[in-house]
Structure formats: C-alpha cells, structure tokens
Image (cartoon, rainbow, N blue to C red; front, side, top):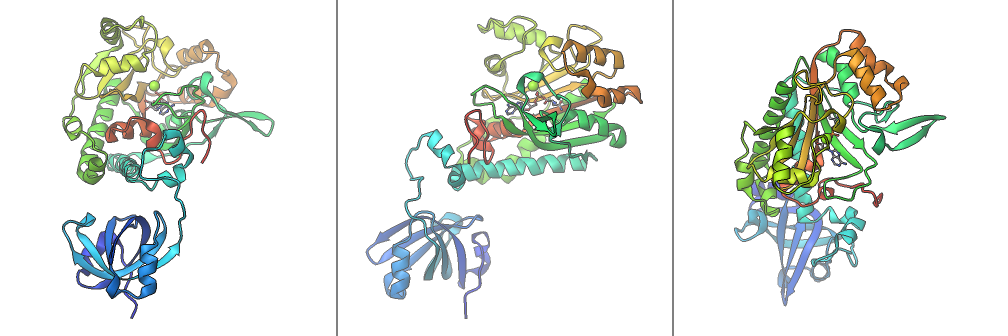
Length: 432
Ligand code: 4AD
Ligand code: MG
C-alpha cells in the first residue's frame, strides 16, 4: 500500500508511520553508506536519513545524486529527533526525483545583491527571503484584521487615474485611448469619496512613483494601506496610527518568532514599542536636526538623513507633525493656528528606517482646496469630482498611508526595502 502523503508541518501526527513528503532539496550529504537529505516543502524542513542497506539500489542512487533545489518525493517512517530541523526525521524507504535541478545558480556562498535580484525568482526560496516575505504576509493579514474589527470597509481604488494624487513630479504616464492616464500614486482621493458612504474606509494596493532615487527606502512600485475616517481630526489620526503600529508589532512578535529568529532581528527593539509615541512639531524637528549638524532650513521637507537624526533621539517611532504647506501635498488642511503649516504628520521609525507613515487631516474648505490645486499648478479639470466632495456635504476627515515594504523592513531589520516585496521594481529593474 502506498504511504499516505503529508506535509512537514504535520509530521507530528504520523510518528512511527510511513508517509510521503514532496518538496525541494535544500542539501545532501553522503557519508559512505549513509546519506542525509534535507527537504523543504513550504511548511517546514525535514531531514531524511538514507541507509544504503535498507534501500533498493535505484533509490539509493537517486538519493545520493540529488542536487540543490531538485524536486523530490521522499517516503519514510517518521521518527522523533530533537536534533533535526522541526524535531522529526524520516527514515527513508524510497526517493523519487520529480524535477531535476542542475547547477542551481544560487550557491551557499556570498553573492552580490544585483546577482541575487537577477535571480529573484529563485532567491525567494532562501531562508531569509522566506522569513521576510512571510512576515510581510502576516503584516498584511494583521492590517485587514485590525481594520475589520474596527468596522472599516475596504474600498478597492483604481490603478489607472486621470487625477494626480500626490505630486506631478513622480508620475508614470500612459496613453489611454488618446488621453493621458497615470498609474495611481495613491488611492486616497477615492477613499475620501467613499467616506460619506461608509464613514470608515481603507484601500490596500499597489501604488506607483517614478522616483529617480536609488535609496534603500524607495521602490517605484510599492504597496500601501490607506485608511480614511470621517469626523477624525489630526489628533485622532495619529492615535489610530499608533494603535495600528503597536498592534502589528505585537502580532509579529507573537506569530513570527521563528522568522524573526532566522533574520537575527533584535527583539528588544520591537518589544519596547508601546503607545504613546513621542510627538515633535516640525519646527522642533528642524531645531533637532540643525543641532545635529543638518543644514535643513524651516520650510524645507525633511530628508532621509534628517529623519535618521530625529529617530536617534527616541526608542520608538516618533510623530513629526504640522509641516510647512510648501513641503506637503495639496490636499492637507491648513492649520488654523499657523496658516504657514498644514495639519499633518509623518511617523518616523527607529533604527534609520525613516518615514513609514504619512498622514493628514484633509482640506475640507472648497475655496482653499481650489486655491491649493491652482498654486500647485495641477490640472484643475481633473479634480472636478474631487471638489464635489467639498460641494456636497463637506466634512472634517483624516487619513494616512502606511508603506508595507518600509514597515516590514523595519519589522524584519533588513537593510533595504527591496527584499520585502516579492518582485521589486526599482529605477533600474523591471525583471524578473
Ligand atoms: O507620504 P506619502 O506620499 O502619502 C500618501 O501617499 C498619502 N496619500 C497617504 C494618505 O494620507 N492616504 O506615502 C505614504 C507612505 C510613506 O510613509 C512610505 O511608507 C510609503 O508610503 N512610500 C514609499 N514606500 C516605498 N517606496 C516609495 N517610493 C515610497 N513612497 C512612499
Ligand atoms: Mg510622505
């Protein structure tokens, strides 16, 4: 009778019995009459032990000839073994080669990152990449759970748009039957429209920016969460961000302990993340960075180096709020107490990861918003529908955008955000 098929993650239910596992070979060692094969099946790793005298000659030959990343079916009886990865071992009775792998390009040695990115489709199988991307998936699921529990309605927003969402400088443009279309820089304007229908909404999807910057914090395609809440002011907005970030950190610590260990993440840096996060006004932030040697002047946006200088003062994420109008997007609400600034915030992560969230209260006054669109020289005709939201029942509202890759890079402690998206799009990279 054929041995039933199972997966590595469920071997505990089959101790003493014979089962079949299908997966990919991580490595093989042959010592005379004994060979060890470590197989990965997506649920875990298991070591198979092959004893020459107990195997048919063909099976022994197949086992000893296995190469890195070949696909195999291994049949054997399940033994408990504390030294084995996962705690079980297979005493192998049969091995079948399902898909050969000759000269797998990625070897267990140091490769340059460009080489690894060229082979991203294969690099995904490595332990650090698996750990990082599993944490990303957990962060994404955590986001949906958090918002669902709080009665947010998910709104899917268009990728092809006519209105410029953030700024004219970083648009990907495409021909749309003779018209101009842009790849969405944000879903924000559309979740704002859905707010009066559902009160609390969010979008979650890919966004596009033709950023000509080759930094460890920039992708040209990244995924963003954007909640939008009716009747929330800028303070409410920061509290929601804080609550979400604390929730995601806790959840990652609880559910991804194994992955964080593979990545060698300093857990103490995550364990101390608690609300409230420090809040620093933009004006104070400029003083902090200038005292630390920056030549940034009041009025300019804070760059990555400035963000790192600010983060160094704190042991948890820090809010910088109320930036100058000229440094931020057109839709942010003028600060009634200081009209040079807008009611907004960035959330700066510790350890040099920079801005992980950007948020604001939205300009709800029709005339001021119209004036800002003109000042920024945005094509007014594309914003007719957006201005309707101020014409028909305008309301105070706020929202924010959390970049999934930047957030996950910080969670995982990986130095560059390109590893936290399965197939990164960078200025010089469109494949694989
Ligand atoms: O600050 P940003 O540009 O804000 C918006 O897009 C707003 N519409 C959000 C909103 O209020 N609904 O971007 C938000 C976040 C940043 O804090 C950062 O985490 C991420 O998106 N981000 C990028 N991530 C990777 N590569 C890039 N080029 C990014 N640009 C922004
Ligand atoms: Mg921003």
